[in-house]
Length: 618
Image (cartoon, rainbow, N blue to C red; front, side):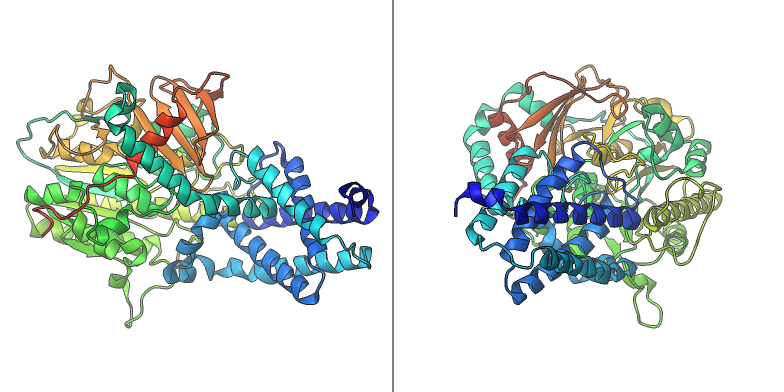
């Protein structure tokens, strides 16, 4: 039967209308569960494409077993998508299935109270099929046409969309549209690496600026201790002065923590970039001073853990300079291979959730809540300070990670009457506030004990957590709004550090620490700029990405941003004021300031790490 006659069939129109109404009801359920209001731009058009896809799937599911598979597939997809939307503000990516199948991840992030929504979404999928069978008791026998309908709608969606996972996307069509990109991704990675290999010797001066190293290399008479605090998912946008400065509307506000930082001599930077999403990517950049994985699957930390790559990381350089180095996190160490990576990165004392065991059992979920964690590391840090002359300690909490376990703690600031009606947003806010109180108590304890005397303290985050806002417009760098606050070893030492409006990034942390401890060297194989370096006459360039939206960015500190799809084939140019990065991003009609070959080459080069054993690795 011809396509023309198939399109004239009223049953097709009824099926599309049913699918469209069903998808709108699913969106409403997503909002109630996640608290994330979808981006309004092109939302209805996105669901029209989704309705066409779902209509094709309904027409294809003629047999009972096929309908059962469709119900289960749709129910599971909706459940996982709602959970991911609540945690990260985006829909899940197909390429993340392997990481999501990790037993630690499943036990900690998937098997929680939100999984109780699975029967609801299975019921909605079953209801869709039942109503379809009632509306169209005799389904049209157009299997080929239905298949073409699904393929054509997902293909058009893939071509038209810059990102397949933002909240305005249709979850069904967006997920199916990821299938061809997942299949072609390995070929694209090989092409990018080949372009990087063949043309590396021809790298232009403009491209070299993406890999610059800038240190002050000062003479340090008394090397300070170093305390590096990573707060899971924290964003500078959650600090009132910064959100006001950039005109942002965050769902979380941490005024007490901001006041505490100001009172105790911290400088809070107003233009801080998080290089990527996910803990292993951000942690790698913070510790090793090299770009994290920008590809779909992160492998750099795993390669180091397996002894296949040997970057010289900041903790190892400090250890070689007489420091006792410790990494204390709240989550299980085996997740993301940190149990093997951290010693190779230079940490001599490494602990995770196992130190919080009670009665031989580890804490449930990701690890101990923040009040327990910060109280524990406070006692250990005071003991370490008495035990060794110089130390460098890195902390990473887990209470602010989905599903936001606070151990029953709850704080109220009188803001709970705000129009944020759903539990996940309240859970996120409460977890951040409990962290706020726990961290303030930790800092007070450390100051009172003298453990912070002659200590450089840096507060940052492993990633920005997607910086959840009350408005979910898809601005570039929404997932890269990081945080950095610095307290110098000596009172009054902030004059030596960069101005608070300088654009800073996670890559700058290891070089800053090495400068402050006298262990820096201009020849270090790192990328970044120390905060002790005052010469910023030549604005630098940076690579960034957001693996959850599939976007990649090229940023020029002079005021240009190139936002590209994951394939780097399509890009949009944005402009901004260098001192107010997140608050002034504006789209322009300018042509991309890098060619496709340059874009491929830059990300290909960022993926390389030193390989093979070195003298220090044995």
